[in-house]
Length: 245
Image (tube, rainbow, N blue to C red; front, side):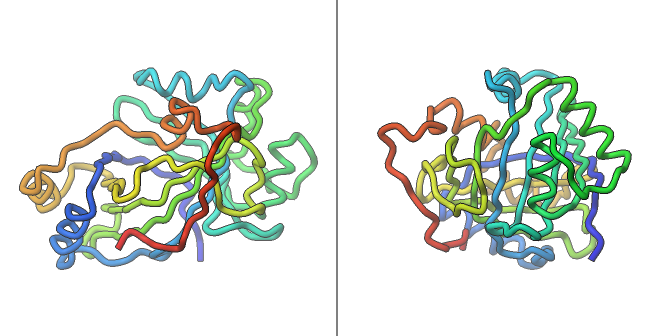
């Protein structure tokens, strides 16, 4: 299956309780269906400078911000196809460009070693990003369970529900498993509404009826601000396999 490599869209985030989550799911049944990944555990490595420049700038909520991450659906093995994603946000619009390659090839490339990644325009953009910021290194592993849905009449409209968010700033190898510090309190969920244009009226009306309002929330940013990226005196948690149901 060919993977989409270029995205331009609006992304709005909402914090939900379990009761609100259940109401949203009931309200969207007539409009949405599960996407290709359905239920999945998403594993990310975020790259940053030694001083965490990228995430510090992002927390300041500038007009323009950008990040680079490696993403795997499930714990990766050496040859598992993963994504290296360059994500930018400007005046509320999200631009994402990504390449797909085996996990070890992406890690080798980011370490400045030879890799089997095919040259492309997107890879050139990632090369420029790396040169601009200098020495980028793995800074945080972020994990979460996700359920993803798309609109039956407009596949550019997507709803995702994230829960069981964990982070660690040590042992930055995704193949070593899913564990870390809890970023999101138990019983809370992150809804993301992703659209290429205006939000469908039925979604806006449903959110207004349930008194659910947009928030600014970053998983990596929250982990950084709350000091969760160090192992000292931390209680380590692993995901228990429960999705946002």
